[in-house]
Image (cartoon, rainbow, N blue to C red; front, side, top):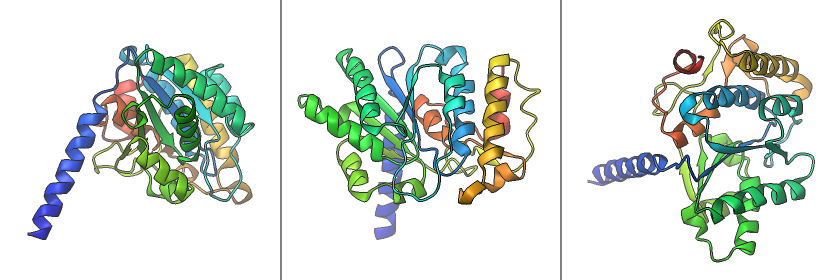
Length: 272
């Protein structure tokens, strides 16, 4: 009986998440893609994959903003992403590593503009939730009339990311937002895309957009430069010549395209 109840509850929770993930409003909502860049280089390739997805015509009008350096309490060196972020996002990104307080203010201004237009905030935490907590706390202080738990949707895919988030801040985010924990994007066949593989992928000959090719080349070059260097995390898939953009699973979930199986299908569907 207890097992049956647990299974029923789990199924209800999954269905609730699936339903919630379909509510992104391209006309009004803001998508924040936040990358910790510490110390795994997978964030770099996740940026390239994100821009590949955004090149799809049906997503071209999405209002998004990227943030670098949204790390938590993990040890290890930062992976400098600035050259890649400039190439991929132009000026549409914020550097939380360089100046945390200034970054909070910059992102808060973008959020306020969205909220005033009756849009919701969707956060793909491609890393830890420490920065998210500070932003939500600041919005609460400035706009106490806003129902934060209904207007902020935070998506996380990694158990490890949760473990190295300051636990008081993780609890704060879970209590003060529509927090969704989805299956890990590093694995195939668990309900979200599996975007990590040591298999060699002929991505360059499948892409036709020169700008995307340039972004991917820089992302991979930087990945190889910093992967496992100076005690940074060694990403075995990337070290073997494969790819890892597992953090894109959160964006796919938000946009309702989480039925992509793996890296090969991603390039088949979105390379052109």
